[in-house]
Length: 183
Image 1 (cartoon, rainbow, N blue to C red):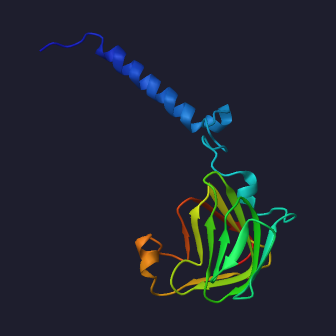
Image 2 (cartoon, rainbow, N blue to C red; image 1 turned 180 degrees about the vertical axis):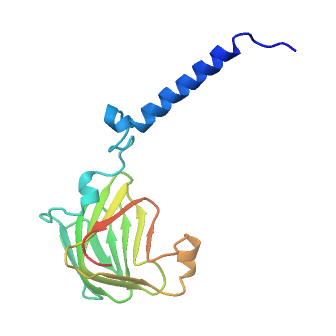
Image 3 (tube, rainbow, N blue to C red; image 1 turned 90 degrees about the horizontal axis):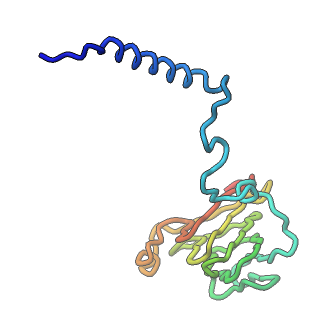
């Protein structure tokens, strides 16, 4: 049997290194050692404003939901056959009631769309109340002190099912939900 004549020295060195590493980990805060990405994301996906939920409504398109009497003040959106269509980047404020319809975002692939729900009540019996078909990123914000309601039916239409739509909010792109209102 062959033995290493320096085995005692090797074991002592390994034990000393293990003690040193353990001491560093246990006292990392005292020594000022921090993880490389503590407090910041390696690939920041969301801006501080997107996470905050507050934004300036100046210049936003106002959409007053009232079934067949729904109105859109501004450009970038229109209402037809129970659906509010949003086709461009921008800010949109939704309030009122849509008793059987939806909001459909179909903007450009690099467009950021911001929806502010301010006492909005949207019900769609056959699909999603809010459907995001295309955009870069959509932020849905619940306005302060607002009570919002989104409802979908128990049975979705064959068209919705074939597209994989299976919830009250459906998005095939990045979606942010924020704000202090209720939903």
